[in-house]
Image (cartoon, rainbow, N blue to C red; front, top):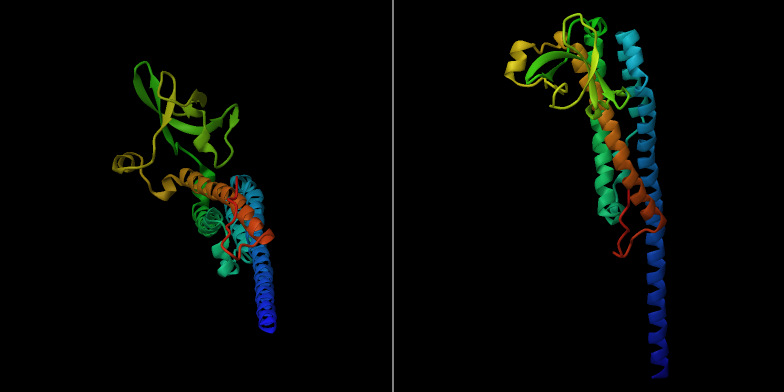
Length: 270
């Protein structure tokens, strides 16, 4: 009986030791894969930062020479998306153990990155095709409504004001005032955004009536279309910046402490 008990005790110790060794191996594998996933998402984040810095110079280049500006956008696209993103680096059983919020934000980041690549290509092709119209910039391209003494008048929209300065590209939606012209050839004047006396609200270039009155052929609204396309690129970059924070945090949590037994991962904060 003593011998049998000793044998059972030895087997139990061996089973426990084997389980511990197996878990250590899983933890090591999980940590290595977590580090690989973290490195890949960090590369996408770095790419986003590089594009953000480069895109801020594009409006000046397009203003000076739209054709050269279009080539600069194409170069931004080719230089940055040649090496990243590589979504296949994320796949493995370890991904399922990352916190759900982290997984969601990681794939949001990649979705925005792929859409950014498409938007940059479309913006470059549009600027290249309508360079002359963009550079010419003659005639009103955008319109707004101004409220004056109980009635409304149509004005041309010359610019967006955020606080006390002109809005940065892509920030037009945050405008607190607009530069408008009430007469052909008149001087632009600032007017606050809103629907009260002396305030201005935008006319959206949508619907059949706008198309009938103003026309939506690209050569007729090149400056407006370029502004919208550029704003969409800036919006993509902002969405990527928001998603990457929580994605990186979640992957860092997993890499530091891999979940191999269903114990769960902490939710990545902002």
